[in-house]
Image 1 (cartoon, rainbow over the protein chains, first blue to last red):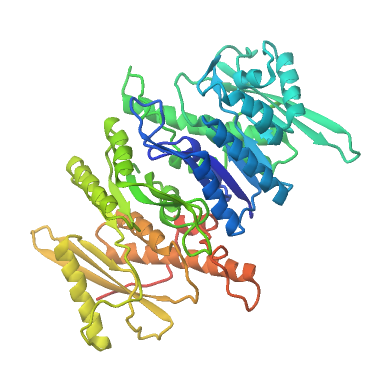
Image 2: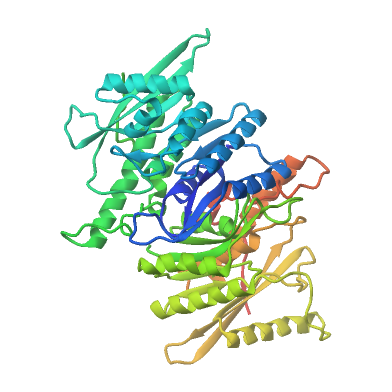
Length: 306
Length: 278
């Protein structure tokens, strides 16, 4: 398999978020990963302390320029996640557009990270850049419910709302949208997290069809960081292998997440000791230990085709 | 296996040198790798063009400070390679010393990257003496600090001919009765007619990994390390020649190590070299 991904995300010295979360799993699955580190921090910002440096939009341009001068700016995928800086994000859009001119088949996997549970954890002026510029060039979008609501200006209270919002997002750009988590109540109960996916495809006769799926995953009582980044990376990998089968791609992606999270919470609880809540350091994803699950994920979730 | 490595090396967006060369193989072998990127460049400096940014000694300190404030500055290994800046390197030494105070069993794997193919020894010698000269050199290095020294490549002529590269290794060990013994080995690897970049970084990382599994068996550790290098290089040159086309010399881009494609060889290296115990 000869597949090259350009991933523009954070780097942390310790732990698994951003490029640290995305790169190893993609490499293990045989993808060539070129990574531009948008920041270098000691660790993610959920720890008591964090220190480091950020890359400016100009510095991003300089790095891309080096790739371009050597004539190696040829990619099959671009992957982006958490970004706080509007000019940085706009520079990413310019790069994606140029890469798409060079390879019209390029697939841009975009996680429009802005917030969760009703509150934004990036500057508010990032929203218009995503809404008006980024989403238009995205091919696969992985918003959570809050981000999907922000991008479309529509509230999601029912599954029907969610399907309409995903349709609006299709019209804005991406042919594939996965609502990675929602507040929808599962028929199985409140301890299940509901995710939805929608893929627009063109039939041989030129008409379009949309496949929508729903998945439910057991909630885990802990705060994990980097799982969204892992999700987007694995969705990239499994849609590459199942380009017209959203159900299969999502089942594998969610299964990988399940195995990594389960291994992580088991380890974290063991390190913390009985009755104690694990620390952010203890809750770092058990990524290298999950190599086999990343390579050959046992399917543990069934996506229902709607 | 719960083993944490702090690796302070270059990062390149594209290709496999520095941390890009060391991290994936170590992770594939189950090591936790914390990586401080001393630079971020588009690609290695063997290409026609390269662009990027460097980390200053102060910025390195800031990153380490973050790790330290969170009380997670506990490492089993430190790994360093190509560094151009003296104050950066001195800061690395300070960090290593502090980490060793916190974990006296920490092992610092150092590739003292300074150059190649340029002799600094002006004493005339013949082939036979050069071997013993290098043994003396390794012994001097032991006295200066490290209990394990591997001369990753030499100009020694192999008895098998000029198309073989000779490497030497020496490990000082303490016997149960307190006396020291030294095991020295020699290995020969077929030369490949191409310039590879990142192979030294891969070598140091794999030597770390395999000495971790064979702490008292230099021969086994080196055989595995050199075998991994062999498989990666072979896969790389095959691919590079195919991409370049018949009669053409491959470009630096085409010669990038086929790292992700070599995952199985990294995990389970078939041994293709025999280290002779001297």
